[in-house]
Length: 133
Image 1: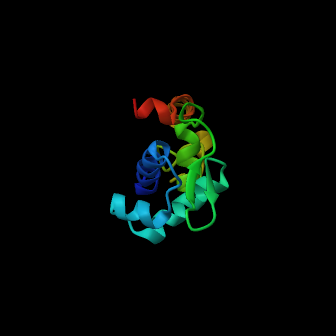
Image 2: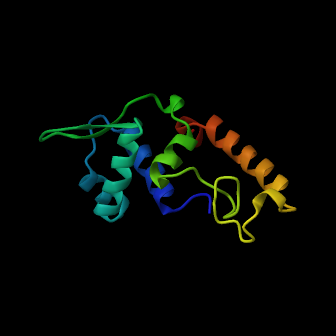
Image 3: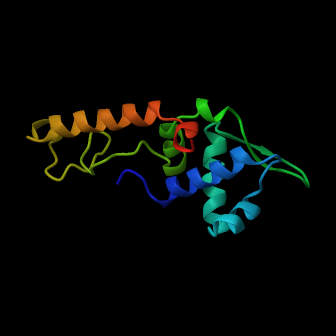
């Protein structure tokens, strides 16, 4: 499970926010994207907590990007949205759910670690700007 709806919704919301000329609130974004407000608000709070978004208070408040789109990695977005480092397989190097309880002696473990490392590197290099060109 690499990306869930939380990551998808985070990317969709960030696309709108990055193109907005003023802060966008969770309610406004939830209407534009047809996403439940409570779920989206949780995602936006995670993005703010990780320093991707800033929350502006007041009548004209909402969320704005903290950095340029070219400085925000997809990895950081996914981690903020998911609340954890994404793993391709349940039994990857980031998981404690190895089916046989011994990932160190697993015959496919080296492949899983290599594959996960390549995915991590790709997501760290890929930016928000890259996916919306």
